[in-house]
Image (cartoon, rainbow, N blue to C red; front, side, top):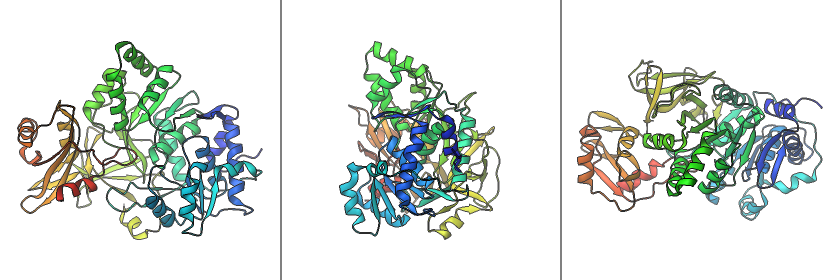
Length: 498
């Protein structure tokens, strides 16, 4: 058997009969997974020699069908465009149009909706059931420089953009994480994250399959099922977003003492638990450490760069920080004049390395504007102390310019979450004639609590400078979030301006 040209597939071939994944249908070996991907590639090619970077959009639930589809697209020389399972038809239609997808692969459960979407476009519709009916063909020879994947940004600050990564970019992102977090074939991870986002695709799924580990899928996050699986043992890693950890904490608190002990024992058997995709509130970090014995490993990354910074696998993890640059990644902080700055000064994070994306799809001007002398400008503001970085927020969303001051919305949120009556909150800056921007907060109070603004401000005065204290309050609202739990602050701002 010839060795596949793509490294992730070549590694899978080496793992042979080892279990690759577990889903609702049972176990599947690496060899069987490669075979299924070969059938998918043959069907997608439909007699062609190479898809030549044609975009193939797919709407497939977590599990073997997802991996089969993604790997089949890559084997056939196509570009994989994974769609969000929970997006409405209008958003799916936007991605199909923007990516100019020529093939749309769907699980049979989505076929009726998909037929309506493709009726408006010249696009070939394929169901995952059809893959099994075609004999596999030799893999297309694909270089590391070719486009592999388009992931669409969350669109919290504008229309979603297609972030293009090459096979080389993906390999670099995976290699960096597997080295830093010491992935091996002995690992077993439970996957509960969306698969249209880099966290779920790269950090969990791709790292596991690269290392020869086992990836177990739940069809969707369910706190009870996650705790059941952790208790049953055998897992070595778990990765999630802060919202998931908050829900797991709530389930733990509702359990009786014997069940809590079993939950804690299950966590202690894991070697690593990671949080990312949004800022982890320090109270959540401390509560999770108390109940699980794990200091959550926080890291920093984004769709365009993969992961860039991480707290250490071995060593102290400081709550509220995102650590140091990962292997193969260069990071610097720059001021508004485009000059590099040192410790204790806030600046924009710029990143350089082989994992950085190649382009925004069909947006050459935005691609060019996103780079500065070969460094990608993230738009995120951080401060570095003794080599360890703390994220202050997004330049356009989380840095509030009020009066003569620049304040971090994330810093204010962290302080507010220490209030015993606050369950969750989000802070935004809203245009104001007098102050430039006014600090505003939306709060979901714990049951039975609802403080007036004046009382909240009094509490804040002992903890925050007066210009950081919110002057407007919306109480008991459900914060608008995207699929990975990040708050949509653009939508929040509209609440206050309206």
